[in-house]
Image 1: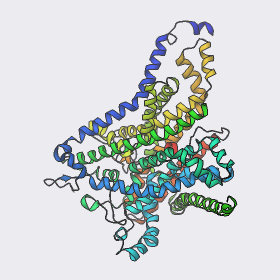
Image 2: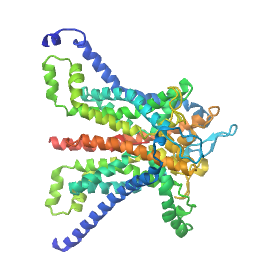
Image 3: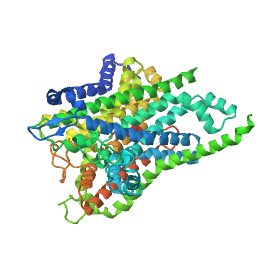
Image 4: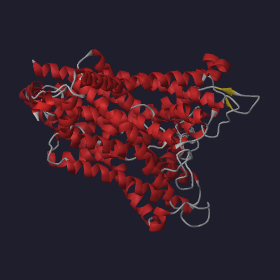
Length: 324
Length: 294
C-alpha cells in the first residue's frame, strides 16, 4: 500500500492539491459571484423602469399598468414592508427575549421540549402560515379583537378607524411576528449564553434574584447581541413573502398606504408575488416589479449585514474572554 | 436597609418568572393551533386518490388531488440537490480546510448573509437568468432558484461537520504521505458524513416548503411531469392555488396538502433529531438554521 502512495502517479503529485484548492476556492467564491451577478441582472433588467421614472420611483405612489398611462412608484410597498415589519418587531422582540430567558433558566426537562417547539415554528412553511392565517386566524382575530376595537375606538383613535375585514396590515404583522420569534429567540439565547460565567456568578454572589442577575449581568453585556438578534428577525420579516401575500389584502398604488391598522396594504415581496406572472412583457410593468425586487434586495442585504456584524462581534468577544 | 426590600425584590422575580413563562406559552400556542387545524381540517382529504391523481376541473365538487404536486416536489428537490449539494459541500470544505484568511472570512460572512435573502428575489433572479433566456418556464429554473437557498445551508453544515473531526486525523493522513485532497475526500468527509447528511436533510426540508421562488420559475401546473422544459407543480404552489379558490372542496384539499407537507417536514426534522440523540451538541442543527426568509 505504501509503495503506491509514494509514487508520483496521477492524483498524488502536488498539482492535484493545487486543483483541489482552486476548486474549493471557486465553490466558496460562488456565493460572491451569485450576489454580484444578481445585483447586475436586477439592475440591468429594471433599466427601462429607471429610464422612465428615474429615482422618483422610490417615493412615487402611482401604480398604473394600463398601457399608455403607465406610472409606477414603490413607496406604498416600502411603507407596507416597514409597517408590517415594525408591528412584527414590536410584538416579537419582547416575546423572543422572554422565551430565551425561559429556556436559559428553566429546568432541562421543561426547557428542552419547549425550546425545541419554539424552533419547530421555523420549520412550518410560510405558505402554511398563510393558509392558516387566511382561513382560521383571520376569522377569530377579526371578530374577537378587530371589530370590538373598531367599534369602541374607531372614531377616536385613527389606528382603529379602518373597517376590519381581517386582511390587513395588523394581521399580517402578527403572523410575521409569530414567524420571526424562533430566529430572534435562538440568537438571543446564544448571545446571553455568551456572557462570561463570572459575571453571572458575581451577580448571584451579590445576592441578586434571577431577574436581577439578568438585569445586572446579562443584559448590559449582551445588548449588542440582542440588538443583532432583533435585526436578524427584522431581516427575516422584510423578506417574508407568502404568508404576508395571503393576508395583507392586496392593495395597490396610493390605496396601499395604510391609514389605520385595519387597512389592507402591500409589501415589496407581496406585490412581486401577486403581479409578476400576469405582468405584460410589452409594458414596463415587469421592469417595475424587478425594480421593486432590486430595492428589496438592497434593503434586505443592508439589514442582514448589520445584523450579522453585531452578532458575530458579540460572539467573538466571548471567545476572547474565554481565551484570556 | 437591605432587608427592607427583599420582599419586593422576590415579588418582582416571581412576576418576571410568570412573564417569561407566559411569553413561551404565547409563542407555542400558534404552533399547536396550526398543527391542530391541519389535522382537523386536512385529515378528511387524505386518500389514495388524493395522493396520486390530477386535480381535475375546478368546482366539480370533488376535492382536487395533489398527485402532480407531490411528484413535482420530489423532482424539483432532487434536481436542486443535484446542483446545490456539491457546491455546498465544496464550499464547506473550502471554509473548513482552507479557512483562516481574510478572504475566507468574507466568504463565510456573505454565505451567512445569503442564507437569509428574500427568496422572492432569488426567484426573480432565476427567472431572469434562465426563463428569459430559454423562453419558457422550466424545471431547471426552479431547481436553480432552490439550489441557491440550499447551498449556503449545506456549506455551513459541512464546515461545522468537518471542524468536528479532530485535527490529529488530518495529521495522521499527511504523515502517511497522503495528499491533502485524498485526506479530505477519503478520510475526513466519511468521518463527518452523518453531520453533513443532517445539513443536507435540513436544507431539503427547508426548500420543500418554499413557494415564492417557484412562482415565476416553474409556474405550477395541473398535470404530471411533462418534460424538463415544461411547467410543473409543487406542493407549496398547489396549496397557494387552493387558497385562492373559493370552493369548499378546494379549501379541504388545501388543508390536506398542507398537512402532507408539514408531516414530511416534521418527519425529516424528527428523524434528524433522533439520529443525533447520542451527540450532545448537535452542532446547532436546529430548524432555525435552515429557515429564514421566504
